[in-house]
Length: 413
Ligand SMILES: Cc1cc2nc3c(=O)[nH]c(=O)nc-3n(C[C@H](O)[C@H](O)[C@H](O)COP(=O)(O)OP(=O)(O)OC[C@H]3O[C@@H](n4cnc5c(N)ncnc54)[C@H](O)[C@@H]3O)c2cc1C
Image (cartoon, rainbow, N blue to C red; front, side):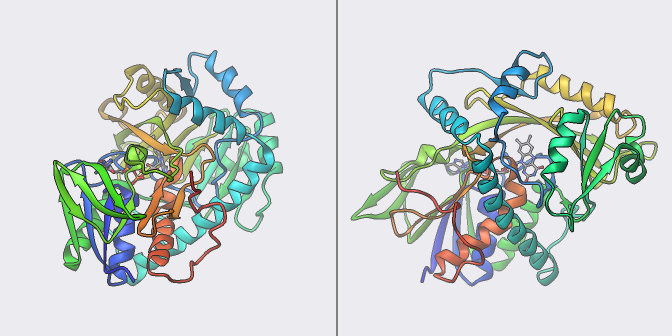
């Protein structure tokens, strides 16, 4: 069994993986390119732990809907075609996954993983008293402006035990901040949760440091993985070689740059944006997490902060924020929830979702027996991280996995 595991990447996925392994007595070394942990895509995401609303983006009709969106100035989707074969390959696979049967199958894989994730986080919170990251079980309401979209969505609700279809008046009764917003109805899931992803990363890092079993090597960009005789042997960073016993790649959207022959990582970054505005005594922020389905904007109260996250920009690897996209989010947020927070003092952020075309992450073994993947969590990385980490820890320790791995395991190139 593995004695020491090396992890590339200190985002929420790398840190939860380290935590799950250290909890089981395994020693970990984690290399992170930046000087701080949880400071790339895991920094200011939507904060929604959306366990039961996990349908992948790729679905029947989405390519047509996307074409319609792109003709609008306020589109939640932006595509800038580039001379990059990775972008074209990703888009072709994405379009291939836009079928109802594939969406349902992948949705089932994600749901299995999400429920494992919820149970795992609950275990860590209760057994290890892991806290300090503004976690709450506040419930989530997906709201619809368009009657056709609402009708379509309500027909797809099969889990009547955990999800309720509500009319506009019932939505406003449940969440008074929705009064006067032109929503026609919503789908309410009372057991969904919310938390601060960056705060969670900091808490995990503190526990890992205190354990004495995890070494952090910060400011170390891994540039190459050396292999011989069918096994991974060492990492290269800053001209130095680090021998490895077992290696996990959890480097978010830049994981594919570390590719090895025979290891498929079909990833592309989907850029998104968020605003974080302070909630003062005079503000009236919703207590429920809200997803504005038609505008593709998610809202969450995280402690005393109001987080608004949105947009899918397929524009390459440049992470810099586009001020016009941020201005659009601010305008739409103000229009929907004018009293929620102090928008004048909102901080702005852009992040790159590490997305596979199917929306399903890659978790597990590769053709190199000591190389493991935990990546491609796309729009659901915070939601799925604890379950993915537990699953990978079980696989590395050669234990029976807690859930069926079908659909989740990496495929050979
Ligand atoms: C706008 C927006 C809103 C979102 N909202 C939600 C939400 O509400 N709920 C949810 O569940 N998810 C949400 N997500 C998705 C979630 O944030 C991501 O899926 C998740 O943060 C990915 O975590 P990660 O650890 O894989 O990647 P990252 O957090 O990006 O971590 C990867 C780390 O690897 C490091 N790294 C990369 N390459 C190297 C290298 N070569 N050597 C060393 N280190 C390296 C990076 O510096 C980085 O720190 C949202 C994302 C965005 C952009």
